[in-house]
Image 1 (cartoon, rainbow, N blue to C red):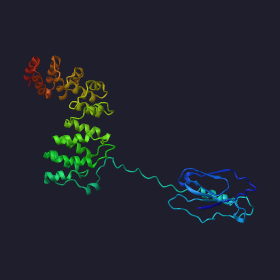
Image 2 (cartoon, rainbow, N blue to C red; image 1 turned 90 degrees about the vertical axis):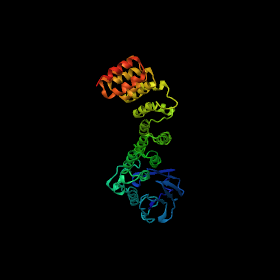
Image 3 (cartoon, one colour; image 1 turned 180 degrees about the vertical axis):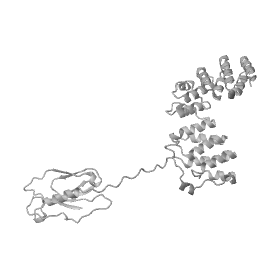
Image 4 (cartoon, rainbow, N blue to C red; image 1 turned 135 degrees about the vertical axis):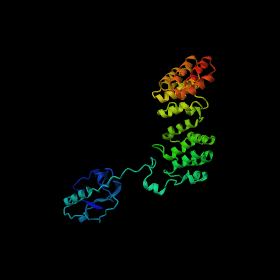
Length: 382
């Protein structure tokens, strides 16, 4: 759009050094900017991201003292106007035509209609729920019983969200074992970088199946995933939970760092993993968990310290035995058995029949004379 601004007579009106003119950025979708005229000579300046040409004044007829504002609107549809379309005749030099002023203000104040706000862009990495259309494109395995082991393994790396659970269940049900480990690891690598808001179903299936296979090859694959520096922090709780299920032996330095993680699930898994890590986690690092605000973390810390024979865990373990006895608590107390612990275990065996057989075995293995007397009494119970 080309606009001619009314002339200014240098002889009658002094031209200021700086002439500022602003326009609203909302009109043309850009920020408010300033048009500054330096002197009366013709030069180009930048205004709202476009070229503005200031023409030098002249004193001959209708073309005297003109400033030409040449501006290309930044709309999707470029608005153009023939040069001189706002030109109005005037007779007196140095006097601006009021019609030109109104037309210019109207042109500059014209607002481009705003486009409606677009909906939120879907997150590529968020959990995907299989829809009816997606299930139609990738139907579940219709008859897994009719597939052999090689076909089950071959479908795992490219399995859809609707198929992956069925295939992984077949790996465990058939006991395929090491033959499925490369396919499960390929399934995990297929979704590398995904899961920033939580584990995807394919990622859960891959890690859980590797942990439940229980072979040396599956444990090594699971350890490689956990030791990878590219593991997303959001996936760490799931990975450590699978590591505890597989009874992995991880680096002692990494496990020590996880003991002070802000998430209670990570801290609890770290105390469990500290039982097998090399080098061993120092005792003073383990003792930090005795005062953890989360009960699950304290229990994991107590059982680990009891297995190592640390006497500092005895009061807490005996309290847990009275409050909620478990198989892990019994095993931890048997690691530092004395007369007091033998008596407490005997009482627990009388109250809880589900733990009686385990307590009897632990007392027999201790070799203590008092333990044999308690065992004789427990065997007389029905």
